[in-house]
Image (cartoon, rainbow, N blue to C red):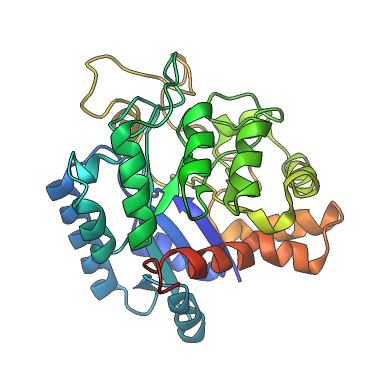
Length: 326
């Protein structure tokens, strides 16, 4: 079983076919960065068209059991998530509405301070806001997973402790391996994993040691060390693959509508666009390379199976249902 915990590709039939060629059974896809509720609904609509146009390749995912159905029918189950709480605006009642529409993950921040928590690019991390604590309670109730991939350290630790259900960092790597602002320090990862949560390892070059030149062996050795440190059952892949996106999309991701200035984020003024992917993971057809790499660094078959998808499957099964129905 292969499950990717985060992608934001420029979706097309070509990519859907590559998902099948790579044996990817399920993906969590970003359908909102800075969109408000109405704009996010339009993104749900666009995905409904793709499900109609490519019914032999993809299907909408709502529950872990949909992954079983996708595998039985040779398709990829697509689960939706937001990288920002902007789709719920300032209305806690929209948490249940977006879950009903199909959202299964929501980040409390995207780099900046939000109404809910502090992002990893702010100078001061004030932790969860009053609204943030209430929204976490509501997300726990309806089965919308708290994602802290772009959040500050204190905010993430508080979310892991306040949440009554496990939370996730869907796409990041250990900070001590690659010291990007977006990567997570030991105390943060421990807070998430010790409370039953998940860490998805990112293949986005700005999150990698040596960036685009990162080796498969180096990446897989990092995963093996993390398994020893945090427990293999709490680890998966969250590739953060942005395949075929034009460089202009980076501007939307980083700037949205909040600034008139270009924010190069984890890139640099010399390279504002998308970085080149490592040559061993260019698109969804390369998931087999990850499996080979994990085996090559000494992980056994059960450990590899868990990281490649089994752990995400269990997490989906336990956390997408409303409270009392899980």
